[in-house]
Length: 309
Image (cartoon, one colour):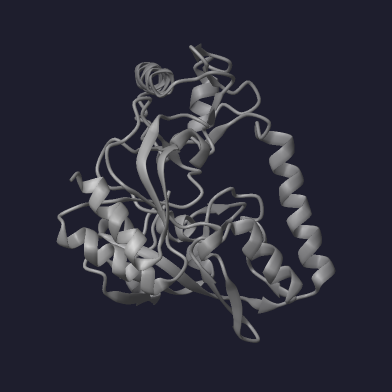
């Protein structure tokens, strides 16, 4: 019996929803990638604990996935199980008048709309970021002067032994596109967000303004993983790429967006190989012409375990 068959049997016996031979292209915003042999979708924290404890006992490291908004999957697929935290694990609630608890499978858009409905301000910057709550906490997602570190009070997790835990305040370790969770083996299961009472009309107007800016400046009409490279110290990746005359540069179906040089888009039929070759070429040209080293923000799923992208 293969490992995948063992995990499939475990899911059947414990009532955990799963799917076999799932296209990874359908689980990421790049719309690129082969298949995963097994995708497990827990519906509760107890199921996450059980799955992680069982897999840990078998020496298996699953790939943990949210909205797949920062992932590049290989064309040949992957040979390990995926734990997908999505709609089955996306509930949220008010803890008090200014605090929201949200499970990690919810989208940032869902969370922002919930905050608006409750008249709470502080998350407007996140409206339109295409990731999950877990992914946003994992990488300290941010835009328009705001970041997760500004609003996250506490993060909850299950480690690879199936044990629950939490980090609060400075222990979350937020930095530029990182947190303590980028350096530890754990699944973020939810977070507490501390916000402020505000005027609903003002909150809505700010959210709509940020969304309009995204539509105006970003190539949202094409599949992508958002910003492809991290911001180097003392410069902006998109400006450096533009300065090097690389807007519109393409390899196969992958292209540097003509609208925003910070985005690599799938203009149609792009493969993982296309994207990786394009990224490598851009890095080499930018280094040669400017002296800046561009570090990828997009994560490659054929490397080490990459939770919550």
